[in-house]
Image 1 (cartoon, rainbow, N blue to C red):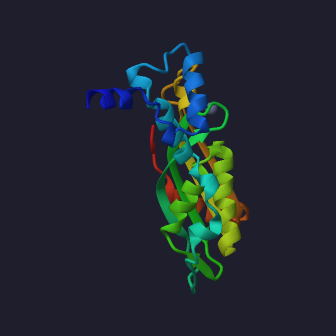
Image 2: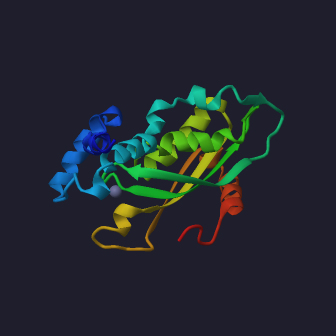
Image 3: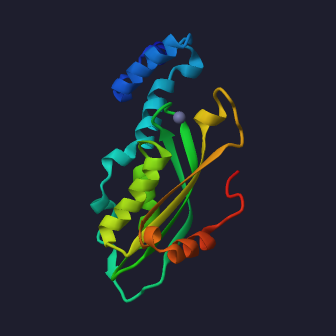
Length: 204
Ligand SMILES: [Zn+2]
């Protein structure tokens, strides 16, 4: 009994240790840590799982996410989904950035299930990203899927690479926007969107 318990203790957890976990063990060593110490023993496997989840957007595609939730309607007012939380990883430092996205579109003859919009946000947020590209991809995907008269997307985010490194500007945030179709060409449409989503200080 005692012997088998000791054996379990020294057995490396090979069964769920993937290639990333093995590399992560090397990274811990290179950082001057002892990957074998108790608190870090399972860290490489956990880190692999976390990284795979945080980049799981690569395994998703628009068709699966939207899953046919498109409806033909006679509705020509702006549709807005506000304050969609997202968490992403900056592709320059592999550090998190997180925030909120506001999405709006002006239907032509189709709408998309409202719950699908946060899922589109997640699909692109769970990748290595730039906030600018994330914003653009969300807008372009909605444009491609329902061919609306226009799409507007605004993202507010805080970046750990700005907050934790170097200048350590704790309160620095970034705002990006993507305006397509009527949101780009019609000031009234854009202003309506901005007035409906404007929050004084959303996150910061
Ligand atoms: Zn960064």
